[in-house]
Amino acid sequence: MGIFRAPKMPAPPPPPAPAPEPPSYDDEARKKEIEEKRAAIRRNRKGRKQTILTGADGLEDDNSLLVKKKKLGG
Image 1: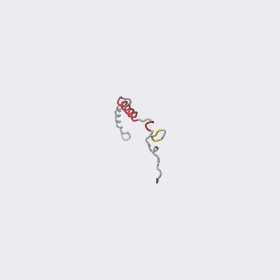
Image 2: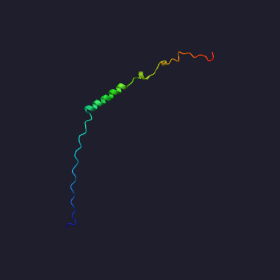
Image 3: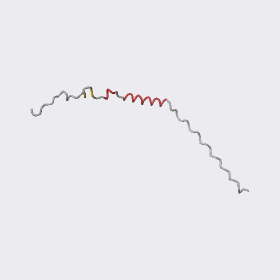
Image 4: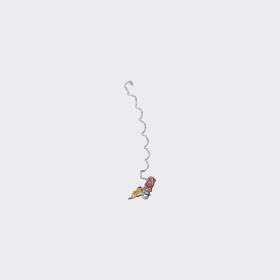
């Protein structure tokens, strides 16, 4: 009575090999790279006093206030 027998199932494939362990997030090279980036940011940072181009009286290099206008025609 071989007509009603189910065929044999093939063996399942072997499981995949485990993935290699990822590199550590807190390694020395990463810490050094972060410190270099932070040092560059600190080095390039400007203070408020360096960005303000005017003094209390307006532009500091403006000499137009010292020169009086002359009348036209005489």
